[in-house]
Image (cartoon, rainbow, N blue to C red; front, top):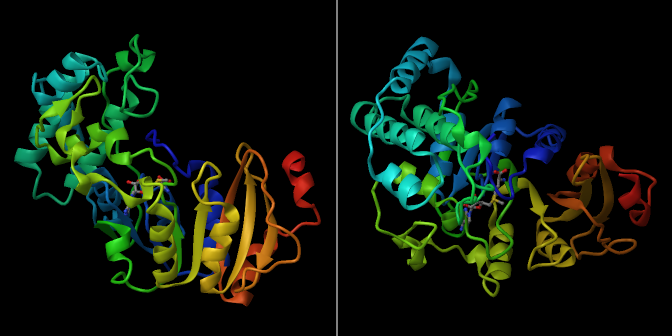
Amino acid sequence: MIKYIGSKRRIVPVLGELLDLAGADSALDLFTGTTRVAQEFKRRGAHVTAVDTARYSEVFARCHIETDASDVDKDDLREALQYLSVLPGRHGYFTETFCVRSRYFQPFNGERVDAIRDALETEFKSSPLYPTLLTSLIYAADRVDSTTGVQMAYVKQWAPRSFNRLELRIPELYAGAGRAVRGNACDLIRSLPKVDLAYLDPPYNQHRYFTNYHIWETLVAWDAPEHYGIACKRIDSRDPVTKSVFNATREMPDALRQVVASVQAEVMVLSYNNESWVTLEELVEMCSVRGHVGVLAFDSKRYVGAQIGIYNPSGEKVGQVSHLQNVEYVLVSGPKDLVAAITAPYEGSRTPSRQASLF
Ligand SMILES: C[S@@+](CC[C@H](N)C(=O)[O-])C[C@H]1O[C@@H](n2cnc3c(N)ncnc32)[C@H](O)[C@@H]1O
């Protein structure tokens, strides 16, 4: 699985269960990132729309969400990956920038990335396999990188995995239709079709995905951009259009409030990160415009969950919103009966203060 900050890898099964409990046939994953959550929704049978500003997220979504596995000729796919795997390496932009000027990858792997990516552009651009092959290349590069999981720096000594030979594998594909959309959630939110369940996992702090994953942006754009600094970031990292309001302390709360209010969905599920600029109380209040709000808390290590409260549209509840340590919160909002039904399995007699130790 690709390394990605804020990825919901560990609560994916829970989010899938919420989809089932909601009886949802259609879903929106508005800040899809790796598409892990969107994939879980699709795997459970929903028609999913996956949205993100990142170029690589769009490629992942075109592979995992938009591609219908039943339309893919597996022999063709295997053959294409085999062909790409044996291409001789070539010292190009990728090798020079990310293996010589910086040390994200070993040059012998960088040269293969250059050769494979060039071949994708010249020989596979119009093939339906293109997003799947490109996804396979990004995952392969991720497995042999020399970083701690973000691309703002590389480790001083080559990471042990960087000595492995880059290996193309078949990405997970699922039967059924779906949709990949690249764009700004704030601009798109009113035009996206209504769904049964929408999942929102926005960035909650100043760390920009565009710069943290600039190599994946470049690997997809394949535009050999001018770069700067030790990290060799793309020059357009300085361009305001590559910046997200969700990384701006003053703009983020209003942007989130508007998106939350405008999502066209019966049920909205929102992940809350407690390093966020907004508090859990503020989020409950924002979500209250959608109806009732159920707050679930999950231990961040073991993923045992509990319901810690249901709030009415005025944001009122018996008791207070509790803040627990090492806990991830999931807010479920919508019509009262539905929220109650979705959160009921997590209901327990445990008081919030005991949950932290009980989880
Ligand atoms: C916390 S991550 C989502 C992680 C995802 N749930 C997963 O499991 O991989 C937030 C995502 O929001 C995206 N993003 C940032 N600003 C955005 C915006 N204005 N519109 C849409 N997506 C945005 C980032 O590119 C990033 O992928």
